[in-house]
Length: 70
Image (cartoon, rainbow, N blue to C red; front, side, top):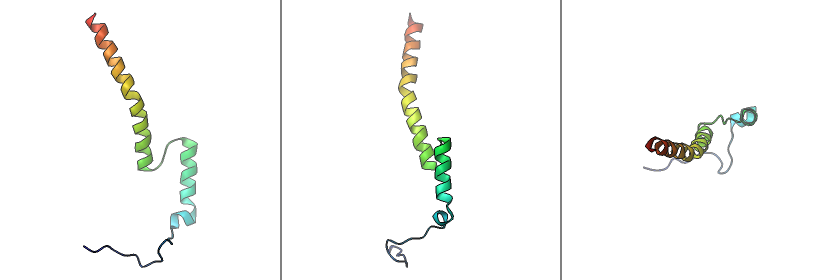
């Protein structure tokens, strides 16, 4: 299947979201709340948080098993 070629000028694009200032407003809100509004940003944030918690949960489970064995 042939690739679809754009009819515009290469390297030149127009975004109505950026022209209206929606991208800038969204970025400001994200920084204020500390929560990303994009799906990929939310997934990265959750991944970082759970990545930090998993070793803690495992160690807590090991400690609990050791206490129950004694």
